[in-house]
Length: 283
Image (cartoon, rainbow, N blue to C red; front, top):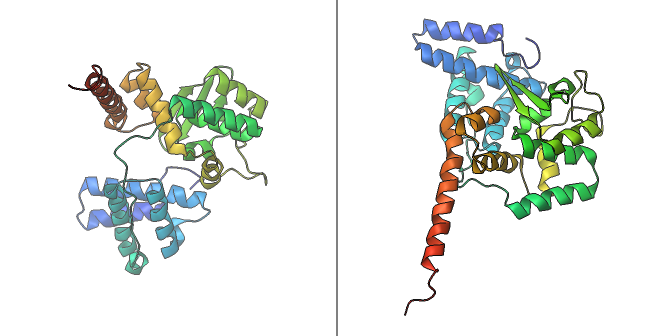
């Protein structure tokens, strides 16, 4: 299996056959196969492999899902697939004692205000680190996930057509680049014509998600907030939901519709406040 390939490895295919033998439904087999392929892709990024699974690998993945603020249902589905896979391996003890403490998702979407948006760009520019400034612009002006940012190769940046190409599993989407983002990428990269990573560490290794999160922390932001800001700004500027959903790579359009509801709720509250205090204090 090639690195980052979505092709199921033989062990996962054997597992799917085992599920068939045990009369599991086609939907269950499909779900478990998909969850294990995602897990294997994550393991590869950590230079690990599902063929040599250890308990620490499972706990680390669950911790990662919690850090990404995945829902309890998503985490339960994942651990269910891995638990069944451990039974298939005849190593059920691999999942014993796995701690599941999902972070409660906030119902309100956190985005940058206009002032926060300007302050962020001003501060990162003042620090004078071209790589970090480019990262902020890419996250803020394309809405890509931090994992997608770290996976970018130079060939994914099409400066001629002002586009960023994101490839993940079976998904390929093209995001138009803003003029500022394109200029920073051009200055940072030079000629992006090979498969080298776009963003690397001081040691020359592909930048990790944790390193990006750590860098952003000093500006009091996180990748998810920048992604939310991208989506919310497009919705606020009357870009249709289908287009925003496609650009953001949302598999469920209802996820995108949250931004419409958030805008409507915010405006409803603002209108109510303006109306309540329009005539001054009651006599």
